[in-house]
Image (cartoon, rainbow, N blue to C red; front, side):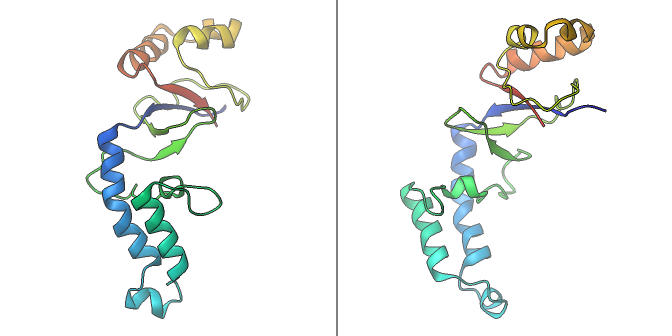
Length: 154
C-alpha cells in the first residue's frame, strides 16, 4: 500500500481574507454566548475573547497559536479549498491540492518536504526511475502550476 503523498500549495491572500472574514462567525458559533452554547456548557467568555482578539489583532491566543492555526475560518462555504495546514519549516499556511494526492507512494513515512521534481529525483535515488512517465509529467505539471508548492508524506 505505502505512505500517502500530499501535494500542497501556499494559501492565497484572497483565500486567507475569506477565512478571516468567516472566522468570527465560527468563533461565535463554537464558543460564543448563544443560547444553545450556554445550555450545552460550551460558552466560554475568556476563550471567545482570546480567539476574537487573535482574529482582530493578528496575535497568538491559545498555547501561542493564532486563530487560523486552530482551524477557524476554514468552514467558509465561499472557499474552494479542502483543508489548510502548516508545513514544518514554512511560515505560511498551505492548501491541499487533492487532484494530485497519492500520485505515487513510498514505503516509509519520511519527514522530507519535496520542493521540486529535481529535489524529488535527488531524494528518491533509484526509486525515482520506477515512476511512470505519466506520474513524472503530473509531478512536473504540479510544480509548473504551483512553483511554491510542496510534496509531503503521511
